[in-house]
Amino acid sequence: MAQADIALIGLAVMGQNLILNMNDHGFVVCAFNRTVSKVDDFLANEAKGTKVVGAQSLKEMVSKLKKPRRIILLVKAGQAVDDFIEKLPHIKTIFQGIAAKVGTGEPCCDWVGDEGAGHFVKMVHNGIEYGDMQLICEAYHLMKDVLGMAQDEMAQAFQDWNKTELDSFLIEITANILKFQDTDGKHLLPKIRDSAGQKGTGKWTAISALEYGVPVTLIGEAVFARCLSSLKDERIQASKKLKGPQKFQFDGDKKSFLEDIRKALYASKIISYAQGFMLLRQAAIEFGWTLNYGGIALMWRGGCIIRSVFLGKIKDAFDGNPELQNLLLDDFFKSAIENCQDSWRRAVSTGVQAGIPMPCFTTALSFYDGYRHEMLPANLIQAQRDYFGAHTYELLAKPGQFIHTNWTGHGGSVSSSSYNA
Image (tube, one colour):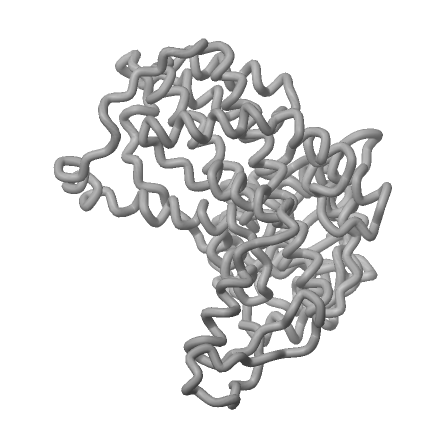
């Protein structure tokens, strides 16, 4: 008898959690897995005592579904999955019913767009997550090695920051991590090996940025920071041989510099999101998507790793101007950056003098300075390319007209075809 509101195929951890989530929200779910013994195990253990039903075959699964039949596939991607997705019915009401809610009850779940748009947006979300985490780590490094703050002091600082513009899930859990004590009564964090893992979504975001020519520098540096951290054994050896600046002693006002670090984190975070939305905009052009950028920000406000109050301001920016070219040009974010700028520069310069690696703080500031410059030294790059490879260049007075100069008097006037790589 048809009794299930929806079926889910694929009983890995994520599939099991999603089934139980839907069950908790009052939906009857039919579970199916290619290895049918997993269905029995799931019903006998994790789903015991719930309304979840199982199926031993696809035919049985379909027979247990109410019409319109709704199915979620959580299995390894491939052609079979793509073919089946074309035939799926709508599942919007169930997904929005179980999604996190923000504001006046708006669900953090919606249709993003055709042909992989949702997957791309999720990938960029994860890339931004990489950036947020690295920025927090750099703030932690400055607190620890420049200000000499103890674990509990740092925990309190992050707890305080979570009551400001930085109010977010990652800031909240950072405070909890810093004050967490191991079974021996000592803080756990200093015992954890400083070699970060990754699943690949940050890397995919950086690769996409390179593919489409978008300077998503912060996420790229966040990925590389994890790569560098993984060279633990090499770094141990290098630390014994490579010298940094002479012993640095901070002699400024600690409370004031702590606020500098907070503002540097906030400004850098703005840059990261600005870059992420630049990538989304370019991908939309490449693939012909129509993306609702304010809606995307709303979806990220709750129920995900980068959820934060900050995202509401991004929604406001795009709702106010759907054609906004860059978040930095919105009045709110322009003002926020201006308010943080002096602190941002002090935090970066002090960290550099102390020999603290800050790849994301520094690349964020460099991007900001590059973006606000009407003229950059790329004219010299174009001249160099034309000199050694006859790649041609444009004149400021004649955009669109490509010119080659015989720089040495011996090369002649032949030029290569112009291209943008």
